[in-house]
Length: 608
Image (cartoon, rainbow, N blue to C red):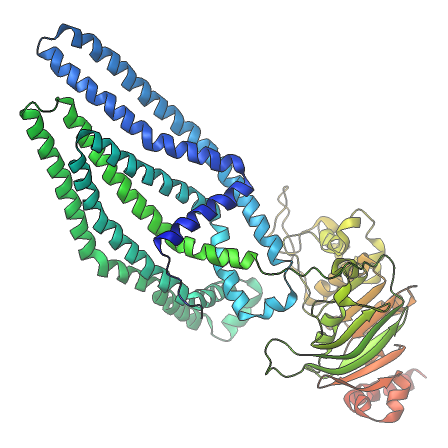
């Protein structure tokens, strides 16, 4: 769990400056406009109050018989009205410009966050500390534009408070100090409350993560059937309520605990405001100050206290976000996966694994792969087999360069993947994993085109035929243009259609084939497809020229035609050879596939 970060006033000021810096890099005009707006919002009301006070004074003088005062009254009325009109026009412009700038800042910061997250070293996605840091950084990034607005509000309210105190100082220095001192307890109390809430927030990151995951699962259509069949709905609703209670109710309790102190500070501010009005009244009665000063003092004191209250409330409302800013900056400083300078521009001739061992995070973690040696030549058909947990999928991740080996080396054409521009290597690969993505928000055609976005305008026919996907796609009401999730609907009102597991798998296969990469990696690619269709798919696949094919499967019909089969057990290669060679050995391969081999033998005898 992250150690609670308590921000000092200096750190808060630094955080505010950092927000301004990030915003300026994203949109310089936003910061300039906000700063200019803060000065106007803080200063214009004081100036308006000043001329309103002069108007009152001259009006009293005119009432007393001063003939020249009447002319001055109308001048000041005109100035005051003009300032009021200027304020109205400014606020209309400010509302529009702020909305536009908020979008610009939010878009640029959000894009920067997503781009950085998707470029991290792959191991970080398995790291809990990175996940916690990302959650807090994402919270800040998601609401950055609003934090930016609030920071501008903090600056504006602070300027209003300072300008108000200075404006009172022109009337009487001691009056200004008296009002300033009355504001300090409220500021301190609000800061303490906000820090208590920050501590609670940081200590409950996992609570909110669990809550969000429960809520997400309950609203996922593919999970609802199991939740209801297993009677989990009520249990999850109760867990959701408990987690929400743990997080939100404590926040409200903190507010209750600080209520007496806040009431006391509010009372002190009220006394200061009344005291200032009593003082200026006595000054006017004693003719030490003009009549208009009552309005001036009343408005400026009110404005100063309002500015102080707004400053504290605004700052406390973003105190949590400012604390998360440090997490955001720390997250953005995480090193991205850049790889080396070597790039691949053609299909590889040879892929080698040399004494490769690998374990996931933690020195005490067990090795998933141990001393793996393998050579894959261009256009070879390789099969990887083994029980679940033998290390097959991890092998694919290392082959793809998503992870670096703990020891040993994965090399392509003699170059270690550590020295390779990883994007150039990925362009040589077409990988279909067990847990492939289902782009439910896209059409059937787009689900295939996503296999090669750079060549998305190429015909899809070959990919559909190779994956035996044409038949069900053509039966969709809109064919390739049909959405593949019933929650989606196109502009003409045509609703999407859910696909079966086998149909989704064929669509994913079509996507992989559309990529037309020289190295094809298939991890359990046909588990939801019937055996006859699978046989036809692989027959077409093996006929493709200039393709290196690596297949992970539990079906003999899929792997028996491979040039070399590697048998994995507990992260090691325990057998290798052709299907016939491994069957003759009667070893672990034969033991694993014995029942399937007998079934295939019976089928062949019947057809003989």
